[in-house]
Image (cartoon, rainbow, N blue to C red; front, top):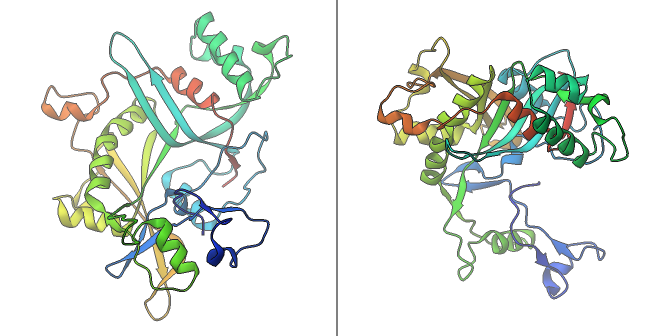
Length: 331
């Protein structure tokens, strides 16, 4: 299974492992998607829960490689149904200015796709000529507009319809205790597992993941709320259970708010008739509730959780158009 990538293993000088792979394969990436720790299967690779990869072929095939659990997740997250939907991965929003820097990375941005022109988008978002020229340059860079096109502002291209953008963030457990000397690093454990030898995988670093999630949870949700959309956090049930055991958070007790809500999409490994975990990933449930802070600020120390400024929506459009479409879906 595809998973968390670490350093490649060169098969040329590895006579033992060489026999397990085709002779045309020179290097192997030890891809691990989950680790068994304390009797539980922990997802350590975000792609195990949701995976769309940027591809310079334009446009991608509709619903290409879409898994049933991914479809269930997207529908539960609120992705539009019955219309063509675009997915852009690894979207970076970086801005500098006198009001402070903005530097956010979105795992996925999901929005309906429509045929439009740079000119129409510039009018819609009230962009200056300089901003419009920058958007043209971005569209050329990813191949939306041919470099030889003489009227780039009026050429029809596929763009996201950003009335209500959906940002999806995938949070998984990370590993700890990787020790090459005792063989508990990913490479060593992978090698021993392939060769049917006893092996010990790294442990799970739960605290680090929780800390990383908290630093992003409120800020990114506040951003999308300002843009008329929402952020959904995809998390494995085991990780959410651990967070609730080690903090005062109890998602089942949190009421919904009229506007300022945190949204989770909880995934899990299915079990067989004997109650054992299978390798089948499935959507389990949605959890949404009051964030407990005003996304517009409250002049309290909780404001440290929020972005210092809220970029205009055309900045999101520009960030998206810097990336090629990762997928086109019809749900």
